[in-house]
Every structure is written in C-alpha cells, then in structure tokens.
Picture 1 (tube, helix red, strand yellow):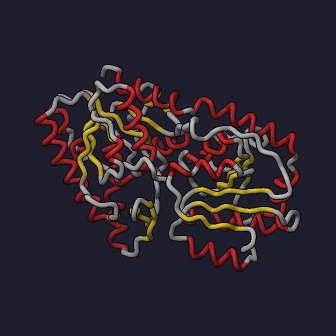
Picture 2 (cartoon, helix red, strand yellow; picture 1 turned 90 degrees about the horizontal axis):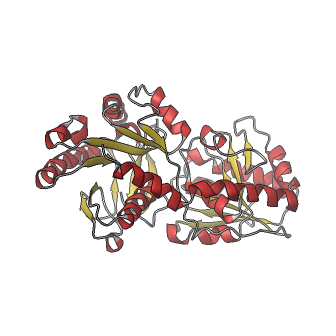
Picture 3 (cartoon, one colour; picture 1 turned 30 degrees about the vertical axis):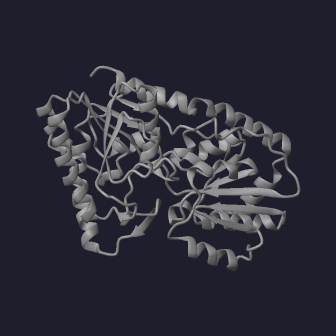
Length: 392
C-alpha cells in the first residue's frame, strides 16, 4: 500500500519513495503495490503498478497468494522492458511477505545486481490479518484455523526468502535482533543498517507547554488489543482521584473501539474522554499542539511514529517497557517508561504522573526534543539515499 495520508505503516512506505523521488529526479522508480491512494501527488519519476483498483480489500491468505503471483509476473514483464539496477522489497509485513521474483532468484537472469529489503519491523505472530477499509488499516481476527495453519506453512519459506538479500534495513535494534533470532543468518553488521522512523519537523513543531487546571492526555493509533488502551483508562481512573480536571483525546479506530467505549462507561470516564475517530495523517499534528502527555502502552511495537511526534511537539511521552522503547527512551530523561503487566499498580503510575512539576516536565521534553533531531526526516532520507545511490 502507498498512502501518504495514512496513520499506519502505509505512510512510511509512501514517505520514503516520495522523498527519494523528489531528492533526485534522475532516478526512476517502478513500484508494484496493492493500491496507491495518492497518485496525483506522485513525481513523474515514480511509475506505479496496482493490483487493486479501489481502497477496500483484505490481506487474507487468498489475496496474498494472488499478490505473490501478480508481483512475479509483473516483475518479469518489467525486467524485460527495463534495465533495473536494484530491486527493493520495501516494508514487508512480517513472515508472510514475499516477492517470488526474489525468492526464486529470477532477478539474476536480468542482471539485477543488488537486492534490498526493509525497513523491517518486528514479526507479528498471531491469527490476525489486515483489512483496508476506505484508507483505514484494521486488524481482523482470522476465524478459520486452516487459514492459520497455511500462514504457518508460508512462514517456513520466510527463512529462505530473508536470506536472499544483499542489504537489510531495520527500523530499530529490537527489529534487527528479532530477525536474527528467526535464523536469518545472512545478516551482518556490514550488510545491515538501522534507520529509524523519520519525523517531519516542519509539521510537528516544538511548542512549550504549561500546566494549568486542565491536563490533556493523548492517544494516537489503532484500537487493537496490542495497544493496551484499557490500561490507559485504568491509570486515568486512579489519576482522577488526584485531579479531575483532565481530558484524554483518543485518535484512531479499530476492532476494539466498541470495547473501549463500553469500558469508558463502566469506569465512569465519559466526561473525561473524547473519541475523535480516524484522522488523516496530514491533520494529526493539531492534536499534539495542546497535549501535555502522550500514552503508548503497547505490548509490542517496531518504531511508532507517535513517539517521535510527541518528542518533536514538546509532549511528554509515556510508554511501556518493551524493547522498542527501552532502546531509545530513558525514564525521567526523555520520557516515562512503566512496566505494564497483570500486576501493574495503576495508582503508582497515576501518582508519578501527577507529581511531575513544571520544571521536571520542561527538562524531560527539552531532552526529548534534542534526542529527536537525529530523526528529522531530511537526515533519515539521506541515509536511504546513500543506500540506493551506492554502487552494488
């Protein structure tokens, strides 16, 4: 998927391709994708080939297999007509993402010298699959156990597939370790590079925040069980005993929306919670302008945009102690990190948040803004450009 307005991983793929094409218009990009939602803003040196003509489809097993075969045929057709220098599998979705043109090393027949893969995220190991609905990425539970078994069989091919590449790009140290643990023995320090998620610092601008009577919390992302939105609510129930004057803005949607709405009523937080639904990526920055704290208590993440968005906007980040956060977020230095599990004492977290004074807050968000500079998008895209422009 290519969608520069998406809140999901589709945005990163688009941003990388669009930015590289703008940086050097002499390089031509032939892009095979499920669907491109923003063809009007494409540079002329991006040529897009789509499988799906509309924006509503599922990435179920059937559609994945169709996509595998389509990319194989298209890759062969285009390689006959063009002299490609490199082939790049961008943003694969875990263990079930293949280009058969690469898997069977057909690219070598056409003298394509280098295969690049990435930015690689952490594997997803569940019965969930993705559904795209009017530009929104939703996770759906796979009810058919036979389909799940087929997915597991497909994952066997992944070890061979991921060992086929000359260069690997990872979004974090934890994602690199995840692939190494998956027995991808071709990965070395010489042929791999960690490039974090970039932030558009011209859009997400640092703004000094001051505490007043009304504290504003923020959550941005999909409504899935992985995101632990229920844990955010449990913390705020305890926080309300200390300070009733707060608002939590919930931005996004997903399969857990009805459950979260029910929990809000059960916990009697209706007056403190605002559901905004799906918001286009181009408008997300507005929610950071007035926010004091951002919650992201996920069970698992690769490298979420929202972390950098909070850092760049002067919003204090509150995260879970997962590897993706622990690698770059230091507790009480550039954010707050808490152990989120079944034994979590939510009142302790609420007390810590409420005890932060203006001086502490200013120092933490100042440190975060400084740490964020290395992730400014111009720096990120320069690292990608170095990879694609270097001779194989």
